[in-house]
Image (tube, rainbow, N blue to C red):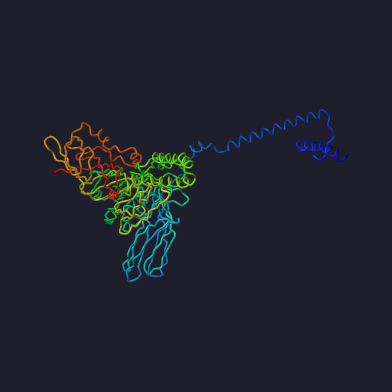
Length: 627
């Protein structure tokens, strides 16, 4: 009986205990009962304390809300940029490797690099022996299977040499090595500094830079206005690729002290789209910079083909303002677009949803859907009919045979459609410097190959431009001999885009001669002429369509300014990639100037690449030849 009553007796006690736990526990000392008046006063005091507690909590909430950060949008609007000062010296530090076997090697690590193109890695070599030494300099990223960048040099007996290994900016760190016959291999870890301000390459000393710009060096804890890398004028690089990655290059000393081959690289850099600043302009500036206007301005940027040149005055203020006005993220004139990011959904398109320059680089979805539909019909209903009429053994033989036949059809379609050749679409903008028999060109191309090409070669006056923010650099590069040899340029069955900057010698010209009241034009530009505009005798004439080497009569047009925009009308896909073209190219034509639209592969170094051209559109500006 007790066992039956125990649970019922325990339940009320638990309920009572639960209610007691839910209420605030009274003090341990039991107070005697109070009269009614005292109880009323006590309840009023309790209400007053509750009101004070609520007021205190409300005040704390208001203070917390005042101290809390604003919403994300308001925070972004009200955020201020950190205050910037002076310049930061990002030349880096020289690291000396072991010299126990008669060879001294020093490599500069932590130096500034551009955000695109190639970064010059400074290496100093000294042969302590009386015999020549062939050496191989190499740089390879830390990632397994990373491509290498090499340069082979030969040191004469007792020779000291400073050279540069041009490392792709997409590989900011890696392992540097020096090796040669009868020489212990030396290695050192190298990193290149990108910086957080305008990247400037200075040919000269820091003292001359401070005197020329009025900027002072800042501490490491402060944000600089510009990041500068200093180089000796005598030991500066001779390749265009060493300068093209920097938005601004400044020469602080006398231009006459610059070696001729270094100055040629600087002049090519300005013509190809760079910003060149001369702190002490020479008197013969027109001879050294032949593409300047006859009377260049002294307190403004001067157009120079695709680039610009600034001639500083005696004071430092204008030179500093010119340097700070350079766009930090200056992009190439024709910017290739790389593959989409890993998280982007449109895998058939390029980065940002853009479409390739080459139509046959896309997957033939329509043909594949037809083949898959036919394969499903044959394997599905056809397999059922075959199994009923011939039995299961025939089905086991028929299904693999149909699958093999489908694969052969897909392979045959690929061979017939793409073949074993390289497919390409190429577009370019070109300045023709006829008095000096050279041209400055900026090109972009889309490529697709079933079989990978072995290698391509560019001269020292040319630069191979990779897509911006490239995730994976896959090209082996050799700088032996001054030019660039690239292996792995076109992988098999993969669409890629590359840009080119080059200054090349040429015999291209457009010859005009007067016949009666009109002008006859001879196309000697080395490409089919698809139209254009020329200014002769203060009038504008439309160029006819001419094959290379052919002649034809030009026809007068009433307004050259309106026709110039119709001549330079690239496809929409090219306009998206040509956001960096400076307005110099579209300036009104002067007497004897022409603007032409051409076909063919173009004039950049990769135009000689064996390829089946899908489309070629090129725009050239220059001066005509008159008899």
